[in-house]
Length: 241
Ligand code: SF4
Image (cartoon, rainbow, N blue to C red):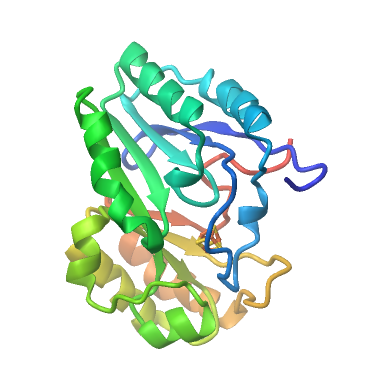
């Protein structure tokens, strides 16, 4: 856990697929190699304390939209059993029938059972993959994402939704649109994250971000299946209090 990091862990997304969202803490991403990511630092091996933090965040849930998104700077497998049980209990209590979790490709074989465990309770689970781009070279040689599969049809057998990372060197308006269109073709929803500066080697590229704002953003701003985060705190979770 990063010292002094005291983020907002609960928020409500009111536009596009309205849902509540919580940012929970797990025991850490098992990949940790992506060259643009430092948010996996929001993790800890102190499972009891993680549960305490998670319980506090989950305690805000009202069930207002019957939908919940759970993020934890890693994969659902990093969350402890007590937290998963609490999520199920709260969903049943508040009438939530759809929960979105995130997951790295390396855990794809854990998804089926995880979904079943919720569907027995009448809760649909949707899994989001941080795919970042369909450009294999950029994804694996530059971003080091750790997704060996090239075929989107195969990836879509496991995952319902994807994150895309845009606004970095090696992209332009055409390539960003291509990625979003591929995402829309194979997946239920696409979340575009514009790169923001952090301590990692991949940096935001101003020129590419300007191209995004001018040529890509207007095309998808009203698309209900596309979330766009110009800043990584746009969902309302993550920023320091
Ligand atoms: S898989 Fe996700 S959490 Fe893990 S290093 Fe990559 S972007 Fe970060």
